[in-house]
Image (cartoon, rainbow, N blue to C red; front, side, top):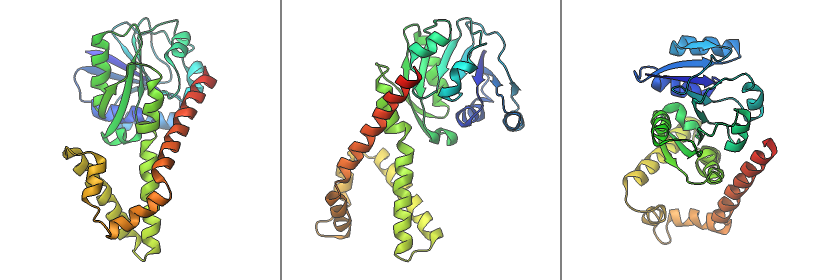
Length: 264
């Protein structure tokens, strides 16, 4: 049985606690400064919560879940003694974490997203040079508890992960809100509009997941020439929505790089 120590008790931590608390492979501990959050974690997950971490061992796992701007200060008194480090702090490169953790390179960086809160997350992972195959299996197992995972070969690829899946839920919510506002303007009541949009998005995603066809082909199959769907899509084409989406992801990617450099 391994110990997993969480440094920070935010939403991803809570999601993992909820999925792992009954897993007999692990014992779970949390270091959290906020008293109200401490009470929440104890009451909901029956987990041991303290303000600081004990001395760790090489057999332990330490998951870093504090804000990037607070990380250096949070790590000042951490004695990890070679534990496996998992970091979900966006933008903090391995070299910076290593510098703050006495030059360890047994680090896995993880870029999760918010659907992890309901076990439907998507996380990209990168392993630093001292991470073993067993370590990778452990990291993957832990993150698979709250969704799906994939590995990238180069750390810089995590910027693209951030642009696509890390920030991706916000793009979907933006589109859903735009559809909601349009539905209201066309006379649909808010409750019906919300239900219709939610089911459309959920159903479309599940259809795409179960289909062997790509997104473009699925779109073509629902678009009759000269029909209602074609009329709507023509507006997207006139507005160059595909180009706008490309520009949006590039802006997200650029900001991810920029943030990492500024923190470093």
